[in-house]
Length: 466
Image (cartoon, rainbow, N blue to C red):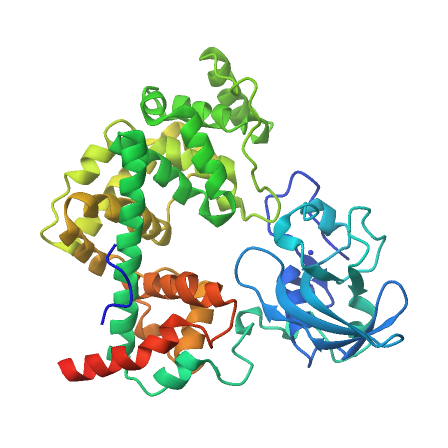
């Protein structure tokens, strides 16, 4: 049976100039982040059952909601009771360090936050002017800190949202709890192959639109450099400049200046000699941001230095020259391990040769190279040769993110050893496919999940094949 179709003393970053993850120093000096506050809200062992709202009313937390691992509010389906009136409030909850973060993150007017009924913060403070009146504001610092045993140091953020809770009670887990590693890998590989086919189909649609495979490669490569926070901004920038125009500049420095100008990022350069050199290059080449257009929306706050757009753009300038696509396509594919080593060497050599950009720290770790291979290179190769999907065998798995961990937990429970699939790029792609196609669609519900409904037959078919 085929389920998948073929086809934050306190330290805060300066406003507008953050290049590190927002964090705080607390007690022992350990650094903590907004995610720590999310853990406090989620865990009844850390959070009192009854809290005091900013308005002075006592609020009972019936349920903090489901931890949302996708875009939107931090918790979905929270349930609170206003004790003075007995009114029960149901909706989403958004967690921040300070009340003003609501405005800083521009949640007002975002339809994804229309169902928010609770604004949970660590510190108390003035209510944001743009926070809808019906939203209850609940600061956690005073009630949580009144417990002298509490310390942010003791919170293992990697254990949330599921490792410290009872084992998974999803329908999928009830079916898969006793399957062996081989069957688990087979299920995930199948889902991963489906994801690869969908990526390839998406590439085909873009190719029909643009008519130029190199333009598709350029746009998707840039999108992958932006990670999830700036992927769309990188894509928009690539579209503004185009691959022929970008690679028409002879040197990495010129390409860098061109990309920053097209993305409206020149002002993000450091105010030093290196930054002035890029400005001088842009001025010499007559590069300016396209007139009459608004710049892409870039995320700058809470970013690790290596993920800042100006550093990611330096990677594009170093790697993406006029020969890159043809060189990648011409790498022999008869040996997947040799193919992957050569792909990594192509990236490494270009980064090493871009001497003039080294001060900006362009780098591509193995995991990011693997992500580019899986999300860009392989889907394009599969368009002309479906057997290229087998090259994924040599591509290492990425570090488990929260989505992959949550999906693995929902399927196989908390005791499943990640190392059993950590080596498989396709298995991790399969986790992403199951999350996006099933778990996310049901918003945590199981009764109408197509995957759970089909698993018994899939496993039965697998046993028959044996």
